[in-house]
Amino acid sequence: MPKIGSIRFERSREFNGRILNATITKTATEKYFVSLCVEEDIANNLRQNDGGQIGLDVGLKEFCTDNYGNTIANPKPLHRLNKKLTKAQRKLSRRKLDSHNRNRQRIILARVYEKITNTRKDFLHKLTTQLCRENQTIAVESLNVQGMMRNHKLAQAIADVSWGEFFRQLQYKAILYGCEVIKVPTFYPSSQMCCNCGYKNSQTKDLSVRQWTCPKCGTAHDRDQNAAINILHKALALKNSA
Image (tube, rainbow, N blue to C red):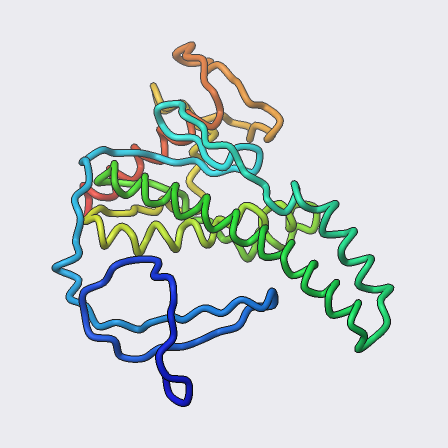
């Protein structure tokens, strides 16, 4: 490194390519990271997927439910560490400005934030990698996350679940694994339609209704699984009509 010389570091991944530049950053917890910008041929790094098809209905109670009825629990890192975070913030506010104790408490608070961020990123990376590795087609809803954040009652829960980052990771990992992410229109009534006969409820069912029976064909539905099946069906229809 310029003005520093050679330094030792732990490498997080292997790469084959020419290093263009390196950026060293220091976090609030006084850890140092080096980010390498590497020129690689993406054709040499493409991976195979297992060729499956999956529809996902995201939520707040459960992170997502697929069309097979499998549910992924929401880790809720901010919710789980909220008391610890509040306690650390309160202690920091009582420390004298520019004091050693304040700086020490600042680092303690930063570590709590770092724990929340790392827990969320680890969960999202593992889940998105698994989805792209196993499926050729991934169907999701096109959500206006920024608009949903205007609901002050749900804003913190939506920020904690981090749907925007989830969809972002799916998009770029899909390129690496040769799969496709198809977004269903925002106002598609996936949870209000019967996936078996296509019947649509005349009145919108409240979010508290988790189970319902189709009055036309008599099929009993789990709300989230039914929505995931409808999302997949709609995505395949969009794909075939393209």
